[in-house]
Image 1 (cartoon, rainbow, N blue to C red):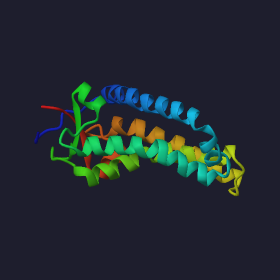
Image 2: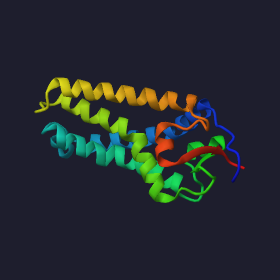
Image 3: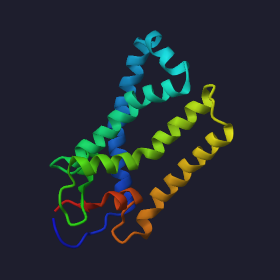
Image 4: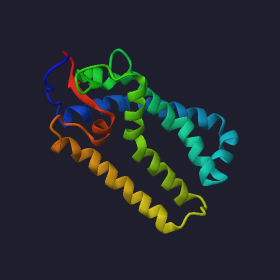
Length: 175
């Protein structure tokens, strides 16, 4: 596992994420089915105010997806189901296991734009005390972060995203 990093192309990483999105989509479909059954109980959580809607959405959607990535990539397999399918894994710079702590940091950075997008959308949809200019500025930050995340592997020596650089992680092919 140690030694030279054989760079994983961005396309391979995207394919791995699309495989993982099969699991995420299944989870979302399950949430939709459950929410349909208990709609009267859930409706106040998403219509009262933006903060409650954001926290509820985070607990039901973002947190489980975040933990899926963090736990899988911090485990002995060093990979989510999608990464395992395409033969890649997340390691430290020198091939070492990143462990759960680094994996939690990496995943938090990875999903920060997603959660920031949820925050801004809830404040656009429900009455909010935040000025419209702030909400639209934060939405612009989301797009800038996503763009940086997508292009950073193109100029990084080891094809690392910004969140990989910060977390000290590398995507490698399994040996």
